[in-house]
Length: 434
Ligand code: SAJ
Image 1 (tube, rainbow, N blue to C red):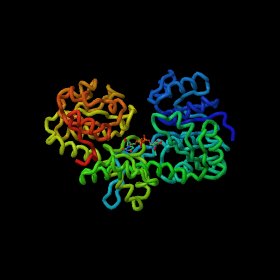
Image 2 (tube, rainbow, N blue to C red):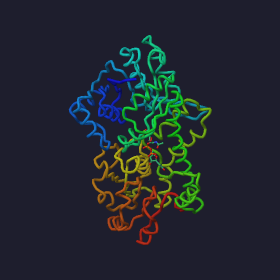
Image 3 (tube, rainbow, N blue to C red):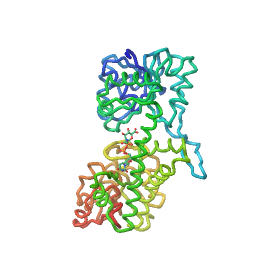
Image 4 (cartoon, helix red, strand yellow):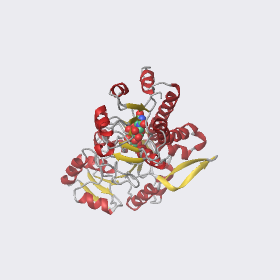
């Protein structure tokens, strides 16, 4: 299938890089977002999200004349839906007393409804948003059927998950393998034709529900793996074992790959996607459900560990190093580090937080330091919450001189305990066997 014009609905972390990349490859793209402030920002040549290389790619696409942005979709050869699928704020599912979160599919529904009056015979519609299994068949296809056209017969319908890592989106969009799930094999082929415009990785065709499951399985696998790593850390603390050494040794087995424990699982993907399985089939997902519970409870475990080390938190000054949800990004969404800070404060600690990637973040109830030195000043304890490279490069003296001999709690295996202890610093690590 040939594509002269593509309409991308949703200009966020996925939609904007995807629209820009198509345009950079010579396709006419209309990028659509319902938020007029975002559209204004983009029209002015600026971008509203932080992603390395995106500004340049976006500007090139805009300058080429191939990319335009609007709040309204228009007729096109292909429509690509890349809108958020967060949780409902005020509604939970319940299975035998076990509460679970529910996906908010309203943005996906409205995007499909916006396409409805524009849909023509021979079009391709792609859903990229992470969604519960069978969304393409049971939510999108029925909405689009209101046009009188049938998915798979009159137009092509595809689910194709994005699998890019924040921080490396532009490279991974092109290089990663792409799964294309069609409601028919002709639909899958049309989807493959579309993505082959820029994808250099393997393009693999399957059916729509398989593609939906693949996306959820990838992130659920990672969540369950991290949950087991977090439980191993707890067990190691109980049995006086260094979990980092034990995981390293277990991973020498050719068929074992245990991920790393830490303060919990954050971001907008791994801590979210497993719930889509639980919601769709709570009776079949006790493992996935409990892995989510373990990871969600990890910030509390960290705070209890800090209490075991420093005693009562009442009035204690604590420096929290890192608020991002993972190393070397400025993304603070769903960050377990932020939850650790809130829990410490609830227990009476006075926390100063230092986040080098977002020093001026405005987070309700959190006291941000303007520098590392300010965070460390007079601290009774320092908690390392994110493995940012600039923290890993710190030397024991960088902290001990600034704090007059406080206790260090390392939740991410950032520092070598032998090096720090021989420099006279008391360092306790998550899963360090204490
Ligand atoms: N984490 C650990 N231990 C680890 C690895 C990660 O505690 O060993 C924590 C991180 O600190 C972070 C969270 O897990 O809080 C998630 O980080 P991540 O780097 O594992 O994943 P994301 O959410 O940034 O991106 C994931 C990726 N999925 C996989 O690697 C299977 C990415 O490819 C997806 O595109 C993205 O989710 C998504 O959008 O679904």
